[in-house]
Image (tube, rainbow, N blue to C red; front, side, top):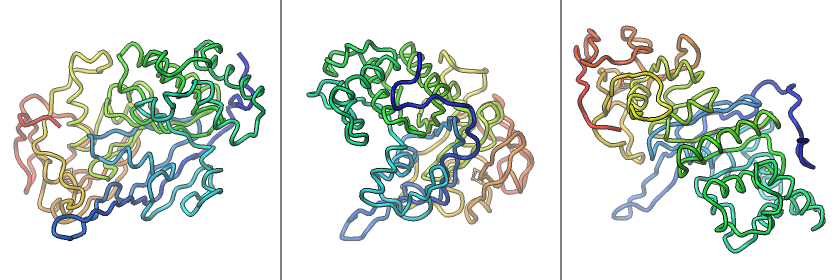
Length: 368
Ligand code: SF4
């Protein structure tokens, strides 16, 4: 099938970074108790990039800041400091009409399709809305485009005359994807886009996203708490903890040789029964909850839950350091400790043998 009108098939010539985030900070203020202001550091100095036609998986616990980061990319939340560039164009200072025009090139797919579909409108009208607004198409031409887009996402064009509630969950997500790609964006932020679907429907929607990426050269920022799903779709992975990116790298390297203790814990928590689980690694459990992002620990953000914490971790924030096999990790073990990074824990704990850290790490605390 040819590309729908207005969409451009990928020529395979795109190279280099499409999205670049540089030292990005997002903060929210709240009045706090007794009038004392609290500043919640939701995203704390994130530097990342996504290549053209690539998928970056962004993972972390609920509250790690990954959804806020996705919204900051589209400037749906205010950016406190740092830079966002798309295709080399600085977006951080854009306002009003310029920002609305720039958003045409980046779209979002949410976990709940109703976030982008009006339940009281025919899906054809919901898909046509951005097309008519940005391209000024006539009603007739917009109808033709909508039918083409529905077919691209695997739905009959005639379904344009239905309401969202007349679709299954997977079909509704296909409609939301059709709306997201209607303006031929270069970047789509998928925020838990398949999390509410059963595994079989997840597979179908992921395959659709893959097909669209390959046909139209899309790039995805794929935000998910399900690490098994991310392994399936992402070329590269970034792991977030308490507003910080603590590890990045090619997907196979991160999953096969996680360098950060937090990444190791997240990966070990994939249930053995998960249909997409790879390997038979031993469960590594973490104690405690995510600290208050308005009052993060000094030094390493993970220090209050890390079984390997050393004195230096309580004082000095670890810098991102290159990892063998690609990517970077923010952990003092990478630079000051023995080479633990890149090696998963064994069943009885890991003998690390360094001053200031535990000799034997118990593998028996609470799940993340
Ligand atoms: Fe753990 Fe220290 Fe590494 Fe942070 S820097 S993850 S506390 S070992």
